[in-house]
Structure formats: structure tokens, C-alpha cells
Length: 324
Ligand code: ACO
Image (cartoon, rainbow, N blue to C red):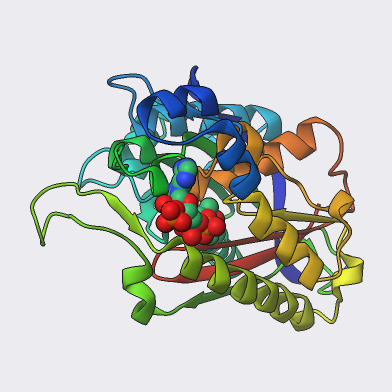
């Protein structure tokens, strides 16, 4: 018998305000044609004035708990992945904890930028596996609109705001690849790649929030290589191959990264969940947003093998393999 973290339910939330590519073209020198051809993005959702990361997270968390049929009183822990917290401290996870009415357990943030949700899943899975918690809420929530340089066409067209969440519960399994739940997670970081994707501000450097800076071509190149290798590494850990994957649920950064990664893994496009056209890159929120869509529309079904992967600033990257 081994402890497995089963995924009981998903939820997500996108702010009401939508900005289309045509509207972006009124802000900076760009066009729907350029953005669509280079990224696949058609629109992004932007949080309203005063709407915070915790507000988005709360909507997604409430939906995930309801889908899972789990009460707040049964939750032992909240892991919230974000690079855009409400405040420098306390952790946004604790704000969500209070707003949910959760008065026990523990809550903290994980900061791995776009890989945050996959990092959060790995952290929660390990807490559940060692028996330090039985039920976990993992959230990815971001308001990247707050850290964009809205005059830089090379970055501002790529990102949006949103949140997604899943509820994990520890159940006993046989230890084989047919068990339901998380089968393997793999994480990586390479801090030498800092300058390729970062925010030029923060409490201890500039005492301001700063803006996102990126060397797009370099990020693209590393993303395809790192993502395909971490997917293979994760499958290898449990003796499976990419042909066993029912659904690849990638971080939704750019349609061309998704296509190139799937091609490298010899996965047909029908097996890849793609939502980037609807909400652009929502960083840590993108994998659970895609998961929620694919479970709600019935594509991901019980027993399916689902591979989540992501890469982000740091660089950080990782994957999480689960039997649904
Ligand atoms: N509209 C119109 N033209 C633009 C825009 C825009 N929004 N942005 C840049 N350009 C111009 C550039 O100025 C340049 O013009 P020039 O040739 O006159 O100098 C031209 O387009 C080509 O620019 P490149 O940066 O070389 O374009 P590229 O083909 O590399 O595409 C892009 C840029 C879309 C950012 C691409 O590099 C990319 O997708 N990189 C990955 C970045 C990413 O996804 N980051 C997300 C965070 S990390 C992650 O989540 C994995």
C-alpha cells in the first residue's frame, strides 16, 4: 500500500473584463495578425480595479471545493502558487484561508512563477505522501496585469489574469501506474537564467513592484527543450512512455511552444489541452485553468493519464503525472 494524492475536483476563475488583440493594438504598435501568428493568443482577462489575486483565488478555490464535494473544515493545507501576491507579506494563501473560513491547518505561498502550480502540486503531494496532511487545496492565481510594462509590445500582449485550483485527498493505492492520483512529480531550477525572464523590482532591491522583462527568443528555445525532457523524465520514473499519455496539460504560454513540445514528444495535437487563445499566459494559473476546462467539457475522464508541465522565470520547470 502507498499513499496517493487523488485529484477530487477542479475550479477556475477569469475576471470579467476582456481585452481583445484589436484592443491591444489601440494601446501599443501591434496587430491581431501578429499576436495570433506568433502566440495563438486572441484575448486576455484583466482584473478590475481593486480586484486582487486573493479574490481570483477565492473564486477558483470555492469552485474546486464544490466540484470535489469537500468541506473547508476537511482541508488540512492550502498551497497557493503566485508571483503576484496581494502584499509582500503575509502569504496570499493565508488571505484565502481566512476568506474561506478555514480556521485550522496551514497555508503558504509557493513562488516559481509560471511553474508555480506544478511546484505547488509536488509540494502538496509530498505532504500528503508522508502523512503530514490528508486533504490539500492547491491554487494557482495571478494578476500579471499589475506587473506588465503596458508600453512594451514585446511582453504586454502575452499575459493575462486568472486563477485555477484543485483539491487533493490522500487515498491508498497499490503503488503501480494504474493507481488513481499523482504518480510522479519532477522539479528543476537553473538560477543562472535569471536575466532571461524577471521582474525589475521587489522589496529588497528597489522597494517597488517593478515590471516584467523577457528575452522572448531565449525563453522559447529553453522552454521546448526543458519541457520535453522533464516530461520524459517524469514518465520514466514510473516506467511509462509518452505514447501512454491520454492528455498533456501544458502551461499555456504560447501555442507555438505547445505545438513544438508536443511534436518533440511525438504526441498528436488532439491529446494536448490548449486554452491559451482564451486567456493568454496566466502564469501559475494556466495549468489548473486548462485542467478545469478539460474536465468540465468531459475530455479528461476517470482513469485517464494526465501529464501537467510548466516552465517559468528562474528558470524553473517541472511536471506532474497523474491518473485521473
Ligand atoms: N506586435 C508586433 N510586433 C512585435 C510585437 C508585437 N506585440 N512584439 C515584438 N514585435 C516585433 C519586434 O520588435 C521585432 O521587430 P524587428 O524585427 O523590427 O526588430 C519582431 O517583432 C520580431 O521580434 P522577436 O522578439 O524576434 O519575435 P519572435 O518571433 O521571437 O516572437 C515572442 C516573440 C512571441 C515573444 C516569442 O519569442 C515567444 O513566444 N517567446 C516565448 C516567450 C514566452 O512565452 N514567455 C512567457 C513566459 S515563460 C513561459 O511561460 C514559458
